[in-house]
Image 1 (cartoon, one colour):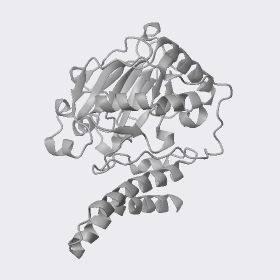
Image 2 (cartoon, rainbow, N blue to C red; image 1 turned 90 degrees about the horizontal axis):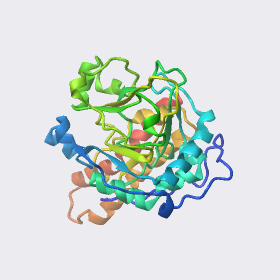
Image 3 (cartoon, helix red, strand yellow; image 1 turned 90 degrees about the vertical axis):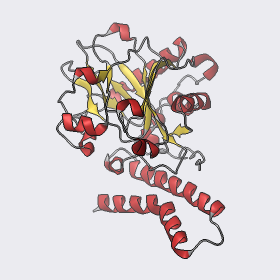
Image 4 (cartoon, rainbow, N blue to C red; image 1 turned 30 degrees about the vertical axis):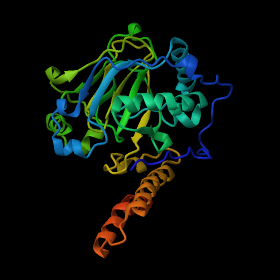
Length: 329
């Protein structure tokens, strides 16, 4: 069953402020959608048929593809530059900004644009939406102040789908390459001397270069799509201090029959309002599953089957209650 889009919250977390005097987003002027030049499927990375059956899409990585026009790239870059002073640092990601859709109406309208959502859904081969947790709908990554740091170390994402959109001109810097491992997360974890749960944590070890792909961005405004919870990826060090800005819009599959790839750990990240977002996300999943049960439950169904169907419908909410209860102690 395909879940209906979850409306954007009527109120934003109190610590976020929206930029004043932004240009309006105009898809007719700011988009320049062109299909991906190449695509890698989960089978190409070594995932089994059983693992892939649990995924909404069979696509691992696709791109590069053009998303923004020159004008659209320039405007998105200018907004990102205005927000840079609010950026944070972490041990894994050198310099990033969270809550982009709360802070910028232009970027929010870009991430929510139906033309963009339909375009990336076609690339994925499944129906997608902006992620149901607004904090996950857009991150912005900046070049580190210290060029000896990696932009981002090898990792998997804590959500299912995203695309990496280059806003800077890649001809103006050396290094800063987007790379992904041509293998499964289990293989990568073994090579990085961790387990699959540890792949969301910083890891400064390396992977064999003969197993690494690095599709180049031809220019600003080009993007790479990925099923980021299964694709181990990173952004390499930049060779000198310079500008490198990427937007990373997050997406969620509308098909609620597949297990939710959004990791429970996101509820504890400490970003403003993220616990309420996590609760809304899980309630949204349960709402779709309960709707399917209401429509399809056969009147002759036996009590054990009905109980099992009810448990499947509300497992997401029960799990969220357990996670939030642990966080509150």
